[in-house]
Length: 170
Ligand SMILES: [Zn+2]
Image 1: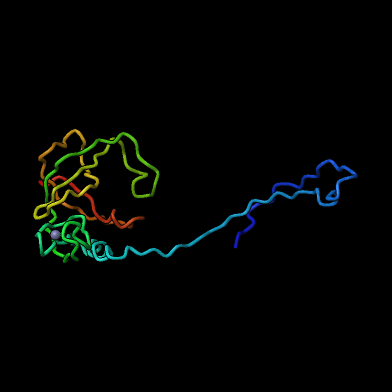
Image 2 (image 1 turned 90 degrees about the vertical axis):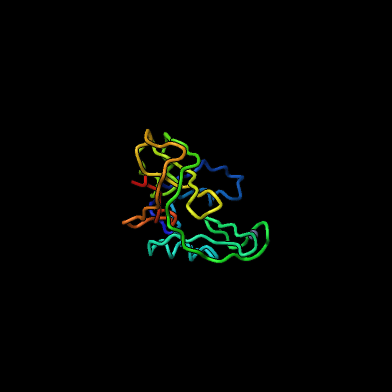
């Protein structure tokens, strides 16, 4: 239900005697606030995020073509078969990256990022696909071929993908 959060004013518009709605020309202006709560599920990807809370990084592996998906895919797009969960070591190599000079305000996890910051595509050890995520380090240090590892968040996050990010492996 909308909640009235303020009442601005009452306006009385000029009355035309021929107007059949003359008695209804007083207009009250209100500000209504509508709060909605959503229940959301991450579906077949849920276990990936649950294990991030346990500081474990999972990918999925296709038993037919042996490709390892990280981020995980429940279904191998080439073989059209369900994949199986496997644990990855969480280390990898930067294959490409961008340095960003603005911080999107899309959610609290990224709104406070100090610019510039790095967004990298990492080939995790044991994986066949690139994993895109934040690489938290001095952007001037980042290079293709740089070794990185997964680090886990030690604070509450708005979106569970921010339970993890990459940092240099050193
Ligand atoms: Zn496959």
